[in-house]
Length: 160
Image (cartoon, rainbow, N blue to C red):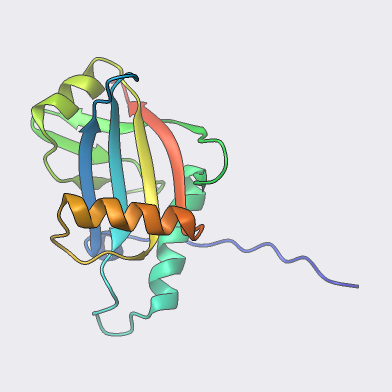
């Protein structure tokens, strides 16, 4: 008889989150309503004691805390997780004491989110080198989605 074991991963703290790579953009297709995006990945292991496995465990802790689903499945609504205060945008990634500050998104992204537009939140499990440009981000997304190494959820701004 095979034993099923429940894996519970810890939600990482600010030290791990500081090593994450975050991109934001607004997609404005001609046939569909605009959609804001947040992509979170992590740089290759570089700190003492950090391994590919520990990085993936940290990312999966975030995935599970926010109830994201594999990108091949239907994208779930994961609640209002974005906090906007003045020029700052933060993500409630499931830690009981900390938020993740996002890099300053563009004005169109901010207007979309402030007006109640949804944001597609994606966590990719493969390393993302810091400073990846739009073409590299697009190629990265295509790869992690095709290899089932991406998790997604739809979120919105949290009202006070």
